[in-house]
Length: 431
Ligand SMILES: *Cc1c(COP(=O)(O)O)cnc(C)c1O
Image (cartoon, rainbow, N blue to C red; front, side, top):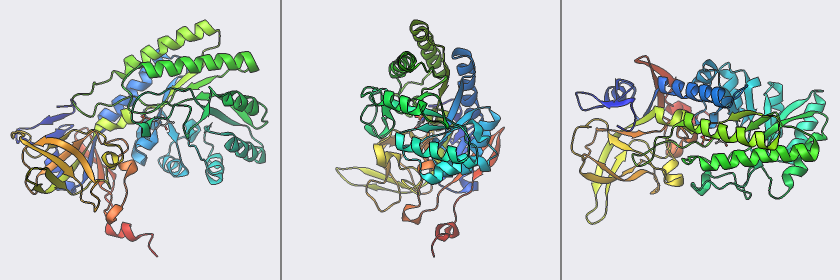
């Protein structure tokens, strides 16, 4: 199997964390998202330990909670001693509702509304990661009104293109995010920020993209950011105490992708940072990173019930399932790779090459193409692996399809995480 928490039992059924997925589908209905809690906790720990060990000091991971924002995940993050990133007041509300100490939270986004800024300050969010100067003005104004000093980081674009899909690339000069170093605008922003009375600049942030397997783009970004910290020290006499290098570590979705060694990646980035810090003569900042996808993605599988197959002679075979873009829009959005298997007949011969289609009135509503399965029958359970990140958090009610239920397996027990939406939920806001 793709991962060691997945296996096949004597009935030929896919198992996750030792539980039979077909039995889970029967008990909880489909579509059903099933997570292995131990795997999520292990990832939190892996990042926490590697960052403490290699970056040293007060370094820590921040869970980029947009990957899967729900109370359960914020509770796990809290229990594992990990900070968080937020990008909206809704995520902040969810974190607060889970008892998370948002003094450990970083508030992101390229357009924080006035309401976001006041709401975040009302609740004592630790840092804003400031994207642009109009936003900075608004934060200064709000902090002045409250007679307090608000810590921030400035989000910079170091000019790195990590060669992944354009829609998930963010570190180039031409980006809706951040302030470019190359154009001189970062310098202007630093000078402007340092002149504010109610803002404390703690350092800089960058995020170069997502689903990046190579280590070079991270090293290049770290190098550029350290060089920038040194440049700012020389020009303005200001030394950054925090350097946040963002998220973006790749996740293995299909066999042909490598299984990244995240701890080793941290070690390699750290040794480069140490060398650059020594060379440039600055004080080493506390290094933060913001993994999202690589914490939750491969802990989860989504289970669907097969409706039927359609064979179009000379063209394709379609397998239709009882979910699709409402619970997972990623294939429709950017043709994301996924491993698909027939969870109810794992031991049967896979000899049927097909396209797995969702149930929406939209021809682009596909989950994957060119998948080889045993020919599915109505009622079979089909599993899409690696659905923990950017699936539920991007889910919609398109075609008035209720969002799926999410459960977690903890020590062999099923823990409800998110209730399946009901029809009443669907009309809750209709007047
Ligand atoms: C999305 C995002 C992340 C997380 O990226 P992953 O690829 O999920 O690790 C981290 N930081 C920022 C600012 C982001 O926008």
